[in-house]
Image 1 (cartoon, one colour):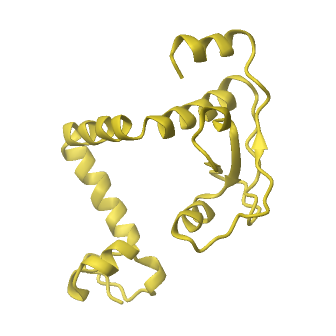
Image 2: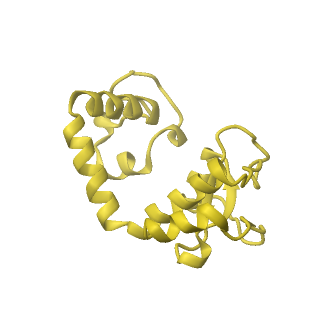
Length: 150
């Protein structure tokens, strides 16, 4: 497949499934070019990005709260990121929530970006992988959760 922007002949897995499904072959854009196009678009029009972020937060409150809970637990409570539980990669590991219920905010499966995308696209199976859980919040951090209505 040829990318409309960089004009390189690339394998199909380097293209977003959305572009393959909804664009004509002459307009296919590879993931790398699409990421650069989005980055430049956000830089040119920061208000549009702020509006998108606000809309996302309004429509996905539980996801945002769960994500923030993990970020705070890693940053302030010593909840340690682990290597990817699928491939073992140690760089840029992300927490994948199995549930966004409040009691599961700090229960995650650690995945690298490639495996994480695979889980969401259905190409990586994480059934049978034991998730990590942060210890219960106590002291100041537990109070912050209540004060900020997390």
